[in-house]
Image (cartoon, helix red, strand yellow):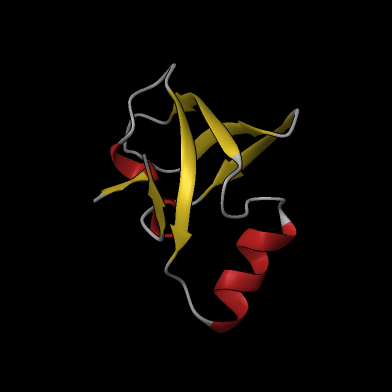
Length: 73
């Protein structure tokens, strides 16, 4: 199992599962990140927070803690 946090810059992955609960899960899904969607990692800040991604043509910033809740392949 790999999380979005472990994905290298410039890599495109597919979301397999969102492990977050309640409001955290809702916030991630409100960004358009759902099971089966492709996520392209554009940039990671020097300390790993935030992680900038492109999802469905939108550029988003994800917190490191949120990225750990996304299982990808």
